[in-house]
Amino acid sequence: MRSLILAVAFAIPVALTAQQPVTQPEPTPALKAPAPRVRPQLNEITQFSRFAADNEKIGAPAPGTQRVVFYGDSLTDNWGRKYGQFFPGKPYVNRGISGQTTPQMLLRFQQDVVHLQPAAVLILAGTNDIAENTGPYTDAQIQDNYRSMVAIAKQNHIRVILASCLPASSFPWNPGSNPSPRILMLNAWLQKFAAEQGLIYVDYYTPIAQPDGAMKPELAVDKFVHPNDAGYAVMEPIAAAGIAKSLAQPAP
Image (tube, rainbow, N blue to C red; front, side):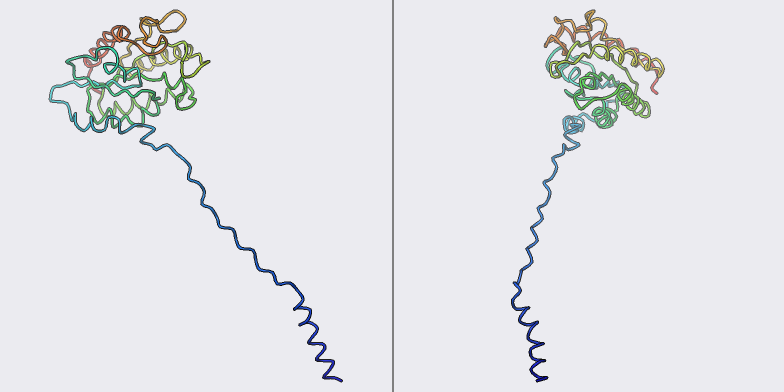
């Protein structure tokens, strides 16, 4: 009897266990690698490659040569490349890149200005900052970028000429903007900053602006922002006079 009871006792769990369904663990789903974020490369942002080969080819200025770099955005880039005459016979170098803002210009300042060993640099910038080409910037941020470029130039014994922003009452690529008030404020600051730093300030704005802050349409190829041949003809003697004054000063 005892053997029968033990046999039954041990058989019950086995029978119950056999009746339970056998479940297989669910396979772990394969983890998908996150899609790489598309980021603009620094070279694309600053366009370091734009003048890299030309900079290497141009080399150092010849002894006694007072090279001047014109540095800026499309207002400089177009000068002599699309419209106007770019100081024929002068050892002047155009390092403008269309669309750029002052932070982009600051990033390439060493490559496209300092490495060329100029006697002076003429900086024309700020329009695209106000147009928010690379995002919104405060007036203080634009001013800081100017301060940094000037500091780098002075550290490398390069004279600095600051040019006023050109007039514009609107930006075709940024509809609804009203840049005139900010352009006037930036120009006022540039003139004051130039005086504080012992720099030359050149005023392109006054002779090509209308009372409402727009560029005179007969001087603009697009009737809004970019000078045509006649516009650059107005700017050329202003720049030349500013360069002459700057080069007459001792290098910093």
